Image (tube, rainbow, N blue to C red; front, side, top):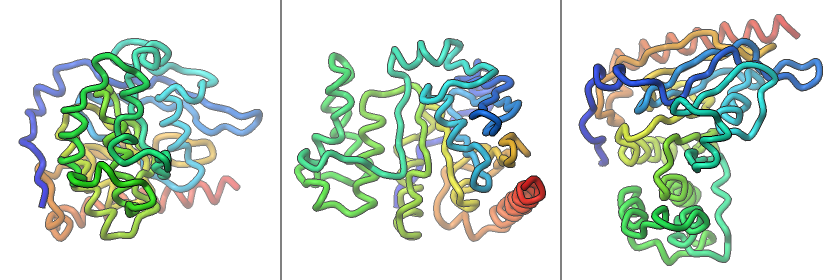
Length: 271
């Protein structure tokens, strides 16, 4: 079973500027307001999950942070610079629900695709080989996507996103299409390969997944999308599967479930 590396001190993390700073964010499509007055900070090595009912703006927020959508109002800063500056220096690694591997490239070749495109120091084959070993894909680098399971494809996608050592990792429901056992296993793999080396903004519909992975869970409500509550997850690291059987984990998930129920009820009243 994989174990995370030792946790860095909270004081060290809190003493630095946030890696992601979101202020007064608003996104509107005509008369439809997808996000309203959203303000949020994410520290240099924090794992933050966005949780909420469908239509609450989780993916919209993630895409604004990554520069894929322009906000109607408000500001996002990445490492004290603009999103455009961050995109130019290739600061973002993306992992989506669909691994989108190129079928004619083998697993190792897919894993280094973005690093190849960037070129120069980004293409560090030793680093890529190390990441493939870390996620349990040693010996599968010559396999084509058609020869890999869904979980293995997502491992390749994670390595591809981390191969060029981005400053920020953005993940939009990367395990949603997987079965429960594979999903749990990949959660542990993700925590191991992450090891608090960079901030992660993670979108999920799973309460248990958010509680297990995150330092904080930002629960959002819809119509319009906005932050309902920012919940600190006070569970020790490293985190292993057995922690999900603890009373502390149960209390956290119960609190999150109540917030989701509140967010859902609010959305239904607004219809």
